[in-house]
Image (cartoon, rainbow over all chains, first blue to last red; front, side, top):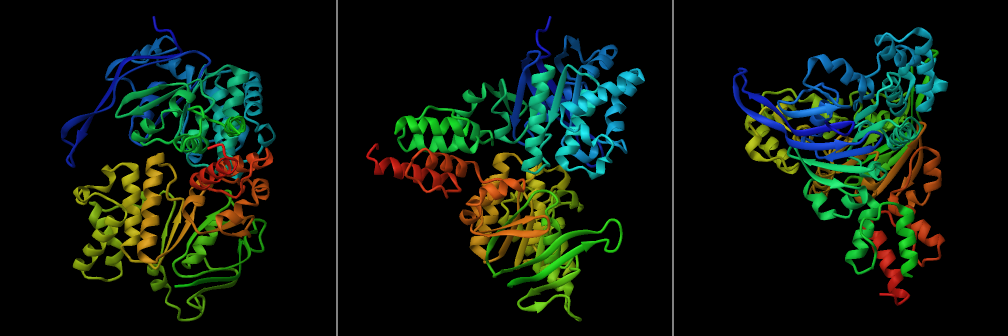
Length: 285
Length: 286
């Protein structure tokens, strides 16, 4: 029996390649034999370049895609089993990249209430959930506003609240900050942090921004449909050269520390935060 | 082609309940060949500003001058201006439409009325500038990866051989390596061709690394204008308007506060490393 909230064994996702006339000319593996286990309540980040397969993997976590080989279990449910589909989707909620594609309501609170309403939650409880979810992402005071008046970061927080209101055990965020400005990115990451602490939801964050993953429990790096690196942020970011071969980067502070190490300063590897670097330099003085 | 903005203001829906001052009394000059960054949070007026630079939007008041000529005067050749001032929008790959890469890049020069041979020559040159591999020239642009599509879209503008290239967040959504590659190529192009490059960006680290001058927009006004070092010296003011300095600048300020003999102005990893190593050398620790 699979252990974690998300558990995959030998996961494969293959799709047909077609020519202009629609004839199958071959097949491509977007996911090529992945084993992964994400424990309940943890915060996991997935990194990988454009086309590495990370979004495809994310889409397996709430059965938007089902594997063509191997098995994906979400909270112990096999996503290939059509009878379990409803439960899988209720267990894992998804937030996507574009804030403008995910909001359907004309008023913030109606948008957030849409999910639980569809689940057949009684009206009183819907309102209760809407209030709690908006509070969790710091958007309660905008509940009566029209979503089109919100900034990108605010829209993403409303989208997160909309998922939260369905009370999933797990939230998968597929590059939720890619289209936001630095402020919007901070707002969203702070909201994600909050809900992890307060609600004990399992959080899976897919991103291109290295600074966003330094608080994760585990980091996975993907390349060519495989998981090529796995460890704590400190372990991962101390392997600067290896990360670069996968088109990834490290936070700027880590890079500065690495540069100073190469120039002969005796600093520890995998420094992630500004305070750490400053303290380490003070000790050397 | 020098650019000058003189007291440019732009008001949306004037006289209605939706009236909004998107630009307020903005003035600056950009000499030919400068590499300029524009930063500002969402809604600060950056996009409205760059749309004024090729005449897509007409200022409510004030003047826009190229080589000293007011682009709003009667008989000004706006069509020609738009071929000389190339604007690459956000997510430009959504504007690709042709059957193959080379035809897509040829579209601009073809519209300028150039013969097919010349179009193709320019297209090849433009694709080379953005580092697009020749073996995919005949491929459909829709089958390319995100980074490659972005390159084709930028090449489409370059093929018109603009004197001024304006890019609105050219690296949004790309992976870290893709971001570096695109910016390196733009920087290289700037170095080789004396083209004016105006880069709108959300990444303080990127602008610090590439541009020679930085214009900061806030609530439709020009808030700061100077070299990255000068601008990021005002990091506290920048924070108040939702911006920040590059991470390393903060490290330098922290070190300074802890008594290190360093200048806190460093804005790139290289500058910061030199400052820190210098201070260790001076104190004889290395």
